[in-house]
Length: 253
Image (cartoon, rainbow, N blue to C red):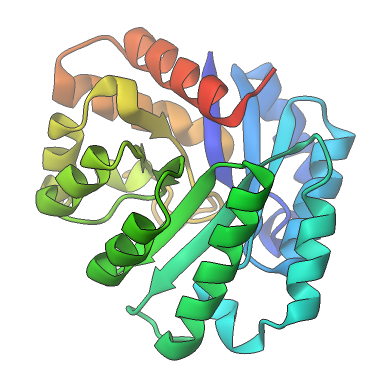
């Protein structure tokens, strides 16, 4: 069993063959997909995909890039989306000071509002953080207790330890296969297998050898294989452990 815990199959990159990709993923051994919302529209589209395919689930959220446009009406609509049994998390939400597509002073209120929504609904969190680790940790510590996964982990081992100490899960993508990603592989080595998820972040971050092409859920197997290599275990063991982690976290069935 493999689970892609973070993909964006609602994105335009899949407009021409979305159904073929989704059905093909299932046929090639991907048992569950968690499609993750990055805006109000994306969250709604994620939910529609989840309703259409029994093995697809939705996480709904608004990416920090969208923070300048966020308003109370958006929050109300997200709360309505979250009433569906196919919604298994709130995310992706967080802080991103790398691209600064939205102002940091707007990112924080958005993050806090959706953290509160998750706590109100007793849903786990899918966290995005990039070059904003200190502020992210400060906010999350104040909101404890919470259940969260730090998706597409890109921090150092100090940030990794802080996340693990808070009880969070760590999700790795195909970028751990990149030739220059030794820092990420160090994080893989230090993260306990029982706290790791697999993801692709498709259509982004295709694995080494396929870079420049559209990423797809089937490539989550590259992530499992690289984690297995780093940890000196079998890919089957990685698949089994990470799938169990994800099923329990997202309550997939």
